[in-house]
Length: 193
Image (cartoon, rainbow, N blue to C red; front, side, top):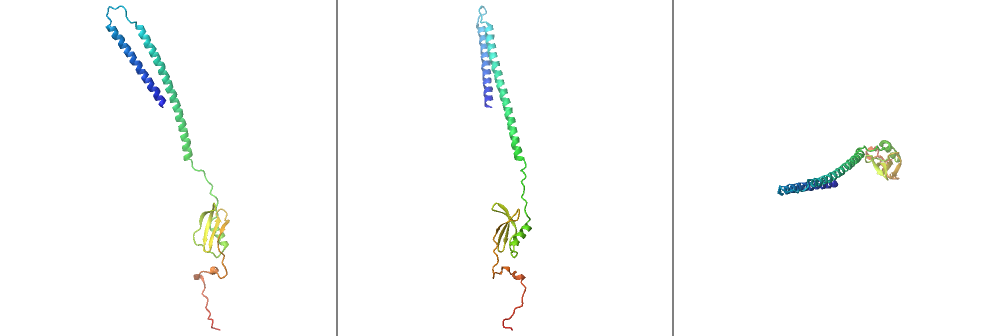
């Protein structure tokens, strides 16, 4: 773009210089002709001035044609660059606006089946909170928090990833039903026979 402006400015200055030279030459020629007495027999030959003007005009036309050719080449290159930029912008827009590639969601077992697997490890445990899917060692896993420990099952196939359920021990009341569910038994007095 700067090159175009520089060529255009140079051509304009060149034209202005040639025009001012021609006007000055014509003014001086007409002024000197007016000053010379009418009886003078010797005059400056007019064809020399015309030849000089023709040479300057030819030089001007040649440079003007060269400048126009440079401008036309620059315009062609600019149009090519704009077409390339438009093509790149279109490619970018196509990539940005393209819908994301469909990602396959791995098949998962249903939470009820996973709960049944977890409770099969110890049927007497009670679930304390809702089942959630969490990442466990970079694997999606169901997390079951029971009253006696936590179990992690692979969400895709139900494999046990971790089991921290503490088994009941002798004397531990874990196997006994909660108080509200106990049947009242008649109490025996030790002193009765």
